[in-house]
Length: 411
Image (cartoon, rainbow, N blue to C red; front, top):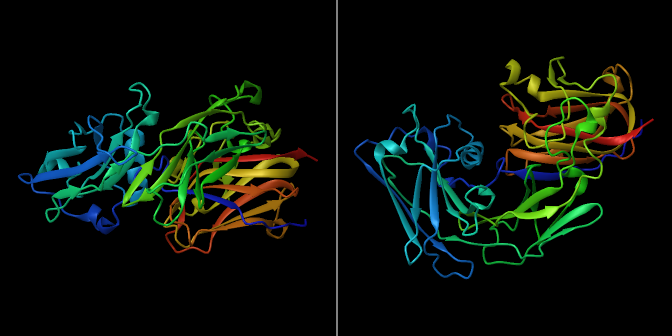
């Protein structure tokens, strides 16, 4: 088997929805601070500005609290807004755009009273729909409190949005573009986030194109037969900038498109549609056409161990000539020295010598624990695909794995 290794296109994310950023000075010790005294007064203050820099009056600022006992701050702040529909506190900005939250000390603690709780504060987009919060957060900050730090001053939250014609759909890709802004990210890299797929790309520049074949294929999960897939046609995208210690995000912008390749060949495998750990435990039953997490496998699922979350096997059922492979919603635990390798074999029951490397992803320079990958198949033949987490520290592993989507032609 002759392979042509190509470095995978890396799309990384700080969280599933990527709408908050940790205040670095408070990590990693903030979560381990003792509880705040009940009699203390905790305050959070800041200001919201319009896109042109003028004060934004009458804008809701929301405060959401997390009591999750997790030391991975990216994971915590990414899940707060995504899972907690009811804000902990709401306040409107004054005429000068300013806002103030005043809380009791007990409110600043986690439920178990062992850690400080994490908070996310975010401004609500003035065009948001109360029945559909997809246009909510436009600038976010995350933080926690201790007895030595009872006041948080949030940098100015400033609205920023895309132009009406910013999203262009072509025959095989969707492209989103944006103008230069004084809220440009400090490291020069924007994040582009496609809703549903949870695909996030780190972009240096002012535009990004995603293949339509990376979009969610089905309107709802397909459980039994691929013909039950109702093509998803409505999608949304946003652009995120990390500047001035805050994460600024545009409102979600809708676009119409359809994944031209559908849910992929792996689902259609006739003999075996299971994904399993290399030790043999079955962890996937199917690629269900929905990439937003319903079919994700976590370390805690079915008592899956850390070792088992380091290696996965996927049987395509027959030999295929591969076109593209998409790994959706992966997350690394203790990820700084991660190396994710992809192997192929066209044997029915491969031995160690039958595996050949297709690609690898080096995670050393990756800022985030979460990632999506597009791996070119290069026309190689494969019956099996193996994903292996190697060259790692003792505690490193995959925290979760979403969908593996495989496209190709039966040989």
